[in-house]
Every structure is written in structure tokens, then in C-alpha cells.
Image 1 (cartoon, rainbow, N blue to C red):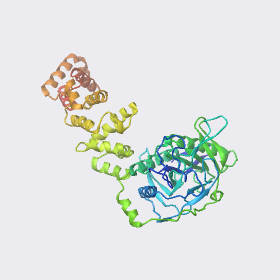
Image 2: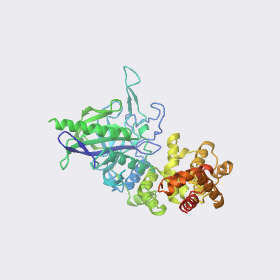
Image 3: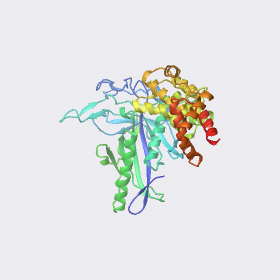
Image 4: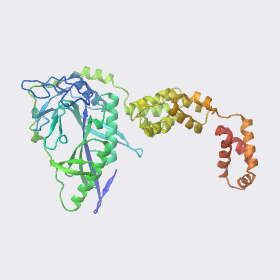
Length: 484
């Protein structure tokens, strides 16, 4: 747990997140308009989205199913009866003057997410609720010096608002929460989690209290933060801002703030609204949403293996360390790739290569697992060559580099370049004798107690054999020669 050090002592952060996740669906929540990202402005707007008189909303069953799937993935209560409400506010990109949302009776109730933190510990964060609501349109203020343009393509797009309990105590935990939530939704196929395209946005609620206090302080809400890095930066800045106010004898105003990415600071946007400011009431055009328990049970039966389950299985079946398993299951594509490499092979060796050389290469090339130049089958072939001692682990790194550059298979490259590991005892012994003879002075030093010279001899033999001598055989023979 991290604390902020002030002039008068330590302060504790109390953080809750509201995540707006766009539902993966071909149509909007209450209309048949398309939801694909990147369309021309106002090209995906139905009469319902534009609030033409007499147009009535019709619920999209797929969006309801996706919300239930997400709730089940969060181990949350599914409410068989929920109600859609009108949340009233007026803005140019909200044509009807209200947003259809859910207030007192959401579709999903309490759940939880388990966080795996960098220090090896875990934390359980409570989920307060998940409700369905419409997105608003987008006001664009940078198209003209005198006018604001409105694009209604997003108006009516289905969102899941996922509200956490105020259980997080650091920017690190907030970042871990967002990564885990995004991973769960991607596994489920309910949201792509692409924050750059706006399909996952985050509001940060943060207050400060003295270390040891149990009473909550006054919170500020930082709206629409669009990257995990910015969430962590905003928490860092805002926590220090509030501590400075409190230690200076001032009060923290309950308000909505924005994160300025250019200046690296939060700034006031407006005073914080309360629920009564929105004058919620049940939408008269929509009946209460009633779900059948069997239908919910049927959805539950179709859930995939989720990150926590997969992590436990990787530890159990492949003998992986908790951290390596956590890294591999962070994205479903990475987990699937690893399993394809590890199937029928040494799981630990496969994990070392996937999380090490393979992920490192992808990062350097700016590629993802899905567009990797080396397939799981090809990497598995390389792991086989290491396991059966055809090549050493060091030579394998050179082979992997060549695989990236040429697209050729590991076995073909080993034969082409003559990289097959030398395991012949006589050949290795001959190389050792030549090195020991050439460096008789260092042999004498070694025998007088300079044990660290052993690595020098290994390096010299490897140099003469082009790195192809079997390390285990080399070490064993060298020890015998030096200690005889």
C-alpha cells in the first residue's frame, strides 16, 4: 500500500474507478445503426439516435447478453429485473436532452476482481455495479475557430458502466485494475478495450485521508481519462494537490476535474453533480427488463476460461512461476500462443522463450502476437532443437534472430549455417587441451585458487568451437582436466 508523504505526515489515497466500456455489438443499444469505428461524421445515425419526434427505442438483445456475460465474468450478481431510466442533462451532442441509463436497478450487481501486483501480492477489488447506458455524440471544437461541430456516430452506442468500490490505494493498483478488467472483457469478447479509439474510458474518483483514518475525505472526479498511463499520472498529481490543500488549512471542493495531458495536471471543470441533479426517472418508453434464469445459466455455460483460471492451470500444468503465468494470460492471444508452443514440450523452457526473446522482439518491431513474423509452430521447433541438444540456448538466440529476418524455420537455418551443437567428447576434449596448453600460466593461477578463471576457459573453448560445444559436456570435462 502506497502513501503520500506530506509536510505533516503520511496520507492515504482512496480510489474508485468508473469505467465506460463500449459493448462489442454490430448495432447500437436502442437502434439498428452501425457502431464501426472510423466512419465519416454522422454516417451512422438513425432517427432514434437523432431523437426525431415519435421515434421509440427498441432494446438490442445482443447488448443485454454481453452485459450479462461481463457480469458473470466478474463473479457478480445478475439482476433478473432491471430498469432503464432517463438521466436528464442538456448538451449539444445529446439530441433528446436525456441519456437512457440505469440508476437504482442495474442489470448487474456486486462482483469482484482479483489484482496481481508487481510485488507478488494480490488484492481483491469490489465491483459495485454494472449498468447499461447510451453513449453521447461527440462535440468537436477544433474544426473551426468560430463554430463547434457535432458528430452523432457514437450517440446511442451501448456502454457498460462498471463501477468499483473505493478499494484501491495507489496508482499502481488502479493501473492493475484497468488491465485486469480489460483482459476479462477481451477474453469474454464483450469489449475490445481499445482506449485510443474511445471504446474504454475511465473516470477516477479520488480522496485523501490521514494514514490510519477510516473516515472518507471529500472526493474529486477526474473525467474521461483515456489511457492507463494517464490514469496513473492523474492520480499521482491529484493526490499531491489535495494533500497540499489539506495541509495548508484549505478544503477540497467536491468537483469534476479534467486531466490535461499537455501540462500534466488536473484542472477544475465544474462542481460535482449529485444524482438528484439529473432528475432520474424510469423511461416511459421502455418496460422493465426481465431476464430468465435459465437464459442466464445458458450464457454462463458458454464462458471461456478466464485469466485467473488460466493462470492457475498454467502454474499447475506447466510448472510456471506465478509472475510468468500472469504475464502470459494478460492477453488471450499471448496465452493461446504460449499453449501452442508449450504443447508436448518443456513448459518452463517454452515460457522463458515466449516471455523473453519472443515478447522482446515483438516490442522492438512494434508488432503484436497476431501479426508476429514467427509462428507458434516455428518457435516450438526452435524449443525442440534446444531440448534435444541439437543447439545450445546461446546459439538458439542467433537462430531466432535469423528466423525473424528471413522467415525460415529453425531446423533449416541450423543445417544451412552449420550450427548443430558439438556433443562429441573427443572433439570437445581436444579443444580443451589446446586451450589449457596455450594458457598454462592461467591454469597455474586457477590451481592456486583463482576459481573465477573457470569462466575464462569456458569462453575460450566456446570461441574455438564457434559456440557449438555442448555446455554441460564442456563444463564437466573442463572441471576434470583442471582438477586433475
